[in-house]
Length: 198
Image 1 (cartoon, rainbow, N blue to C red):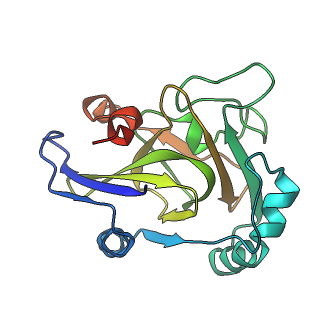
Image 2 (cartoon, helix red, strand yellow):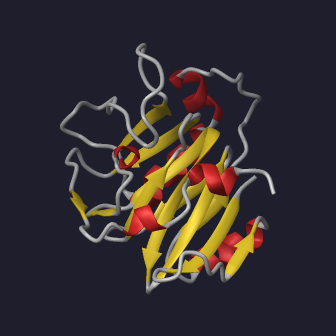
Image 3 (cartoon, rainbow, N blue to C red):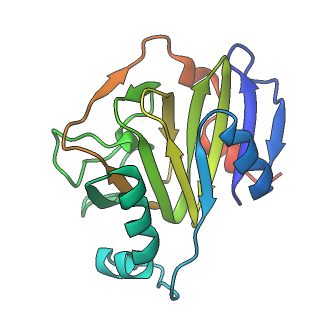
């Protein structure tokens, strides 16, 4: 279930808004310049679909985002990654190489020069967006597209046992990631707390 929580940056326990209504989520995120959308595959995907199957199933959507955003690269990212088993929550080697970090490598607050554009194919994860004195926690699930403007402070958490597959859109080959020093992420509930049944 997709979920949005909005909390003051200085009061993580004070939830000002909690909604699982896609229209409410879309409207609230639009206020901070973030695009949220829901996509449906052209045909049913198996649980362990490979990159080619994912690309075929969402070709029309992928081409549209590339055309409107100027993104030159489209990659499939997965957590856990590789043959060595699960990666730590929110971490894992980049399929593009160690010199090109994924947002998914950053569990502490940081920002990128380019837009962060992710489409969740399977599983779920939480993107925390720190904008105008508030933190918007967006728990994304399969079918969710999130497009966050460059230089927006944020962090990412996929939980202690990550199950996450997403399409990552990139505008250039550089990382352009800058960590922020104040440790805000540690004061907020993580993915596991937000995803727990209520």
